Length: 172
Image (tube, rainbow, N blue to C red; front, side, top):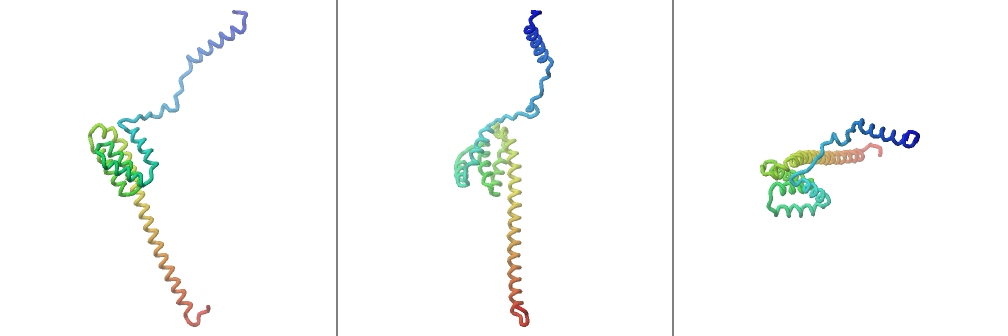
């Protein structure tokens, strides 16, 4: 064994490999700082339901809402209604969605308690959506009003130009 360089090299490699493994400090994985999120209380079902709702047209959403309104249920049904209402992007529907979410936030049963974090997130999101929609409506109304005034002023200017052209002694 002392005269065989291959055995000596194999032995040295084995010693270095074992020594390297023993002294190596495990590196922190990049996901170690990220908190793993697990869903409870039907949140997976709600998220899947929301994904399926996003593919529906406004008419299909209205039919889905009618079907939900015909059912009896607790916090899960209220969350489903809120998700449907939130996708219509109508300010009155967003207000109705916030009412549904408020019902979940005020309930104390185990289903509602598990859904409260999602309900809080959606309430905040829908409030912001309502604020933005109302702001857009106000801006749109101001734009229409400005356009109406601009049209009126243009008509007055044209009328003044016509009067000026009809005055005697004015070059044409």
